[in-house]
Image 1 (cartoon, one colour):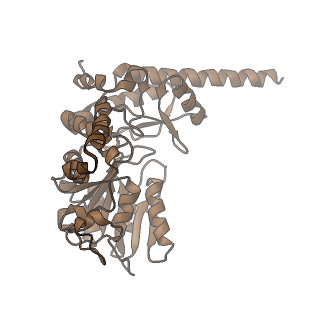
Image 2 (cartoon, helix red, strand yellow; image 1 turned 60 degrees about the vertical axis):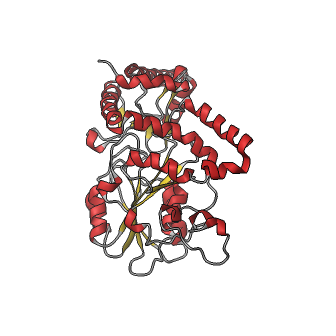
Image 3 (cartoon, helix red, strand yellow; image 1 turned 135 degrees about the vertical axis):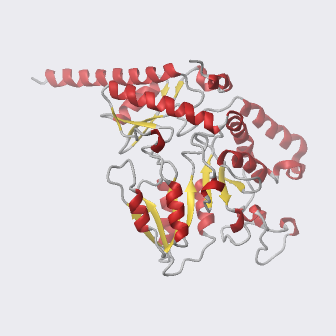
Length: 396
């Protein structure tokens, strides 16, 4: 079978020297980033302060429009920020939590950085947090979400795909339940955008956040925030700055006059170099199309599960592809040490405590690389077991 997506492989330099299976953590860098960063430096060097009026000022929105295509939003509905923690804080700053509607609902398998934001605000005593429990550390029962989300709920910050297990949550059902009781949902699409097709418009989600580090191959420092159009004129973030002003260059004193569009969800000056670096990855994802990426991802992750289990490993990611993102997590003894040795051998994966070795093929991954990584893991585990056996034997 011919894999048409491999024609993009040559655009990623690191793939020449490694088996790169860590796009869930840091996607491979497109070769075009070299040119993009040179463009940034050349623009700064030759245009100086004029660069702001010649494109820099608009980049949080113009680059956001590239992300909008990936997540099913329209132009003018996404703005760029440095990271998801800032986006979550900015969203929360739009509200004045008052009893009884002051409850935040999320699962214990949420990404910790998100929880840190809400826990920090909860210390002020105005927020209550209800954590939805998992029985297996892999999934979160939907019915528990439904029970937890009630008329006292303000926000539901949820991960589309759980970072440890790659469990793909039923976000549509959660969004519908939240709206039924007057709550809003913040969809963290960090682990889904670029590898799982979805549309924020069709989901009718209130907010969506994410970043470019992973499947979007955009590097660090380029997070994004989607705000549903009808909320753009209603909400007034307290986490704000001059880019959110209706007339930022009027330099008015006193309270801010918010811009009447998505730019009211900006704050201070943006990270221009990160935006230059990020756009090449977005354009490649849009060039290929997330539907095609997803089809290959399902095929390769299914194969990975089969090979891992044939090799005697336990997989803790869901078997059902409709419940799985783009990552496979393999539970092995001494997973941290196994991961370290794999990386030393140029098989780039990672490890998370309480989960195991995380492996993620992307559109640029060859099928034979899947065989190689499982074979290498088996070799490492067998060598370690043999060494431990020999050491134990020597004690007698």
